[in-house]
Image 1: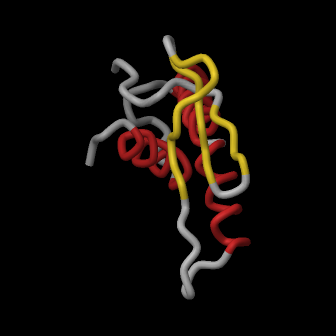
Image 2: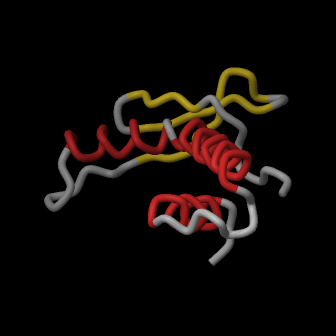
Length: 97
């Protein structure tokens, strides 16, 4: 599947996340968190760090599935909850259901 999101790496700067992309080597805004009475500065900064790690987490998840496919076969021979969760998370990240 072709990547549709801004390529990584992404970097968290306080409450904001940016990534570089082609003609914008200094970075483009990927995400921003607004501080509200329900969501404070600490939560927004934590969200930004998690979002900034997303491209690397997605690649790590794909690498793990590739490893499991090589080790156990790619046709459902390893239906552990962890493998199922990886498939679901990757699908969600890539726009699937």
